[in-house]
Length: 329
Image (cartoon, rainbow, N blue to C red; front, side, top):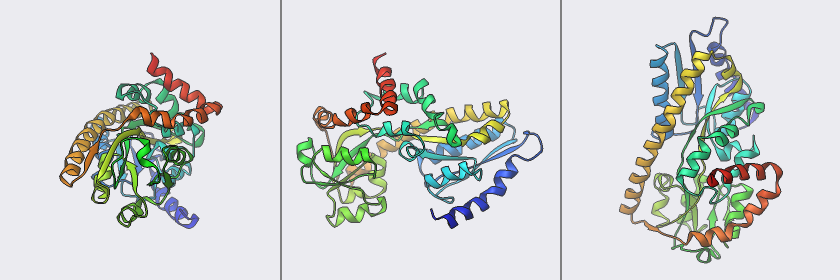
């Protein structure tokens, strides 16, 4: 976001932020939450339900006002607004949190989690909570985590093993880890903007991309890439983030109300996500997509060098060890 736009957003939101914490006691408070998701997204629905619970539990003394659809910018901009004191809360994926804390880069590692139970144990347990607090010195902390499924490859031809990817061009999120991931699989990474992927697939500029099933359908990529290879290489969660200054100003009672509602929203979002994935797979199949089982062991072997890179870094290596130890217990 350009400085002028960011400044305008700050000026627009600042009066609201100041109104939340007036000189009057903390009896009444309104928290502003901005995110870049559409209102039909399951995370927004979970947040809307959380807002209802907060209002009901507090007898209307606590309010959560949600600004969806990128009204205050994308995740990077809203996180900066939190830092500037112009916004109270936002939603960001682990990838979007990475510039603020290297700890979140760990989610870019393929096959980090052995299964769903391992994922849940890490994300909702002591390791996940420690990671969520790791950005406090950056001006914000996370108080909830939301599943976003697993990311898999999809293309205009079948993929069963890394050998099938030789010579292909695959669109990826532009991070060092994801770029090297595609290179290790024998393909060429194409970090083009997300909004250009459909046309690039349609015109043959790229041969495939990677994402979860709901995104595969909602973006209509299913129309131009009929083969969805279920390699399930990464699981990248979303986080509900709050300004640390705002959190510290809340009373113990308000913190309890917000924390309880946030935890309930995690469970609700998981239920909505599971339904969304099932519905998306049905729609994709009806649209002519083929879901392919792959040789996951071949993918794991090809991508093993990424782990060597992470272990060489003291900070990331420490987080990797903590996550692996959770699976061993």
